[in-house]
Amino acid sequence: MKNSEIQALSTEDLTAKLGEDKANLTKMKFAHAVSAIENPNRIKNLRRDIARVSTELTNRKAATATEQQQ
Image (cartoon, rainbow, N blue to C red):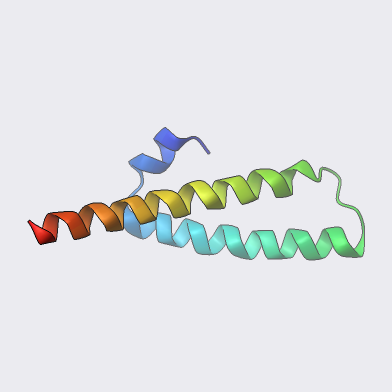
């Protein structure tokens, strides 16, 4: 998922996507530990998506906190 797509989502959608992606990552790691998955790069890409979504949520919280202080 691209950063522009992530920025277009609402905060609620981002929170839901983060939870869903974390659950998928756990499942993929388990599946890979039991038997090799077809494309292990999917794990790497999912970790990166989780980081992007998490960063966007952190930036939004920081922006909200800054607005409230002013």
